[in-house]
Length: 90
Image 1 (cartoon, rainbow, N blue to C red):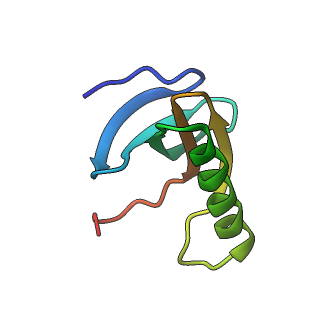
Image 2 (image 1 turned 90 degrees about the horizontal axis):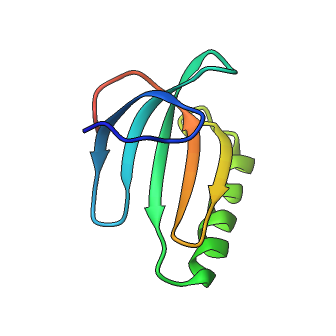
């Protein structure tokens, strides 16, 4: 399924679950593929909770955790833009 995400091209859905969907996309300004996790939110407090958890993971710096490049927020969803690691689905 193709989805439009502002600023990204070649967007392809690669997975998802009960709480989010994950897409692979190309980030033209940085000339690299990224993974974009889209998490819908039902209440504003969720935005802060998701952002805090993402920042905690970003500070961790373990090589087995994808690097977090960006967080985009709206009233309806949070996008986590992360390092794309080519491999098999877990």
